[in-house]
Image (tube, rainbow, N blue to C red; front, side, top):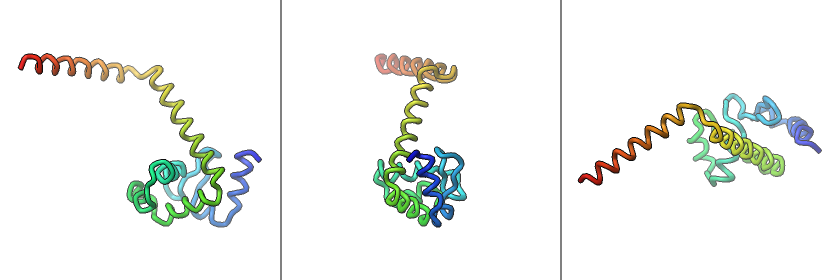
Length: 127
């Protein structure tokens, strides 16, 4: 079964539409927010945050929505883990692409930082 087929099957569950909005197969958000499912799952799985801590971190998400997300994870662990893994891989690639050819402002900031570090080193040596 493909991810899309799995997602379509999951969407048929009565509680799914109550808590989640699907914008694309790789963009599931917490209903009524701009917060992606992957963000709450990452906090729970990879950062071992409690539901209360997650709700406090994401102010537009209720504690009920956090618990619904965790229930979704428990019911569909394979799908949820693949979803988060895909998101993390996308982030890694995006970082690599960014740093391979950073915008000019980044180069200017790097140069400015190097100049400030050199000035600080000279001032420390003089004292």
